[in-house]
Amino acid sequence: MKVTLNNSVLELVEGDITGQETDAIVNAANTTLLGGGGVDGAIHKAGGPEILEECRKLGGCPTGEARITTGGNLKAKYVIHTVGPVYHDGKRQEAELLANAYNNSLNLASRYKLRSVAFPSISTGAYGYPLNEAATIALKTVIHYLKTHTDIRLVRFVLFDLKAYQTYEKVLQELIK
Image (cartoon, rainbow, N blue to C red; front, side, top):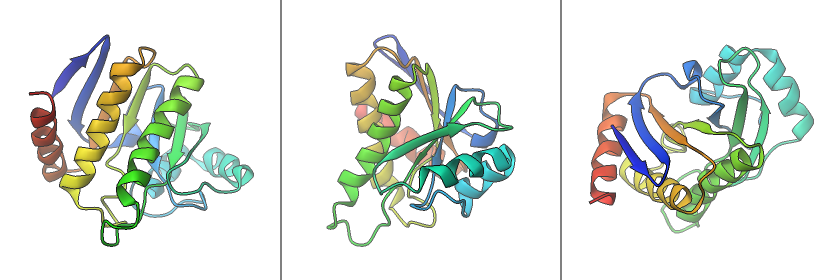
């Protein structure tokens, strides 16, 4: 599914984020930036040791913030590492931290003059964020950014499975009505 906002495209696809040919892909990292499971492990594995080497020099990343490294062996030139919140009960600033993770990733992409960015669904795997709530926060944040910034031309959400894709699609349809 694709929608146009100003001069930018917001796209949803089902697939593997490590194969994206965008300027940057976003890694749903942990605070150490030293690799992990899920998307994080897949990006480090596909991108090679160069990414981990740069991550070590960064000294970690607090929840809600973002850092950038080379893309290593990936098709994307850069990896933007962001840390989403672990979901507890929705009363510990999880929504704000998740929105910050998306916003800070986009701000970093703008600072590096990147035109295209691919995101996974941040915090919805091992961190347990309810998919529908996370999709709403992610899409609202990205839509707002694209409506107020014209530099990024493509934001693609690369969703791991059909359930995630369908959830994001449903939320996006509601938001653009």
